[in-house]
Length: 115
Image (cartoon, rainbow, N blue to C red):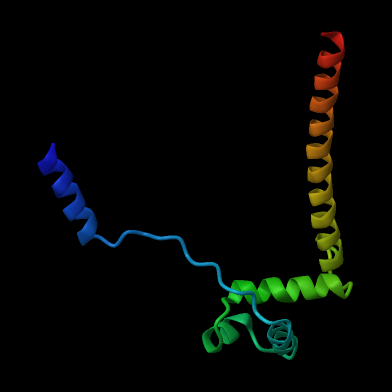
């Protein structure tokens, strides 16, 4: 078994082990806006992706979201709506935890008064 463990380790060390990508900081709002303006001026996201770091799909997403925010598109949530939805989901989660705590406290109190 020791030999098998050694062989497995040696094999793994010789191979490149896939790792999770590190989370990168979001692009600055001014940079995103410049990319959106360039697309609206006629540049393609593919050309911009070759020249700058974000992928073409990322640039397409930025343009689509900017169009939703300005009312040119109606196929998704605006940034303000998305932020509100996130805030409300957090609030619901918090309220569910508080409700669970109160239910347990009430059950505890009932068990103490019956004893």
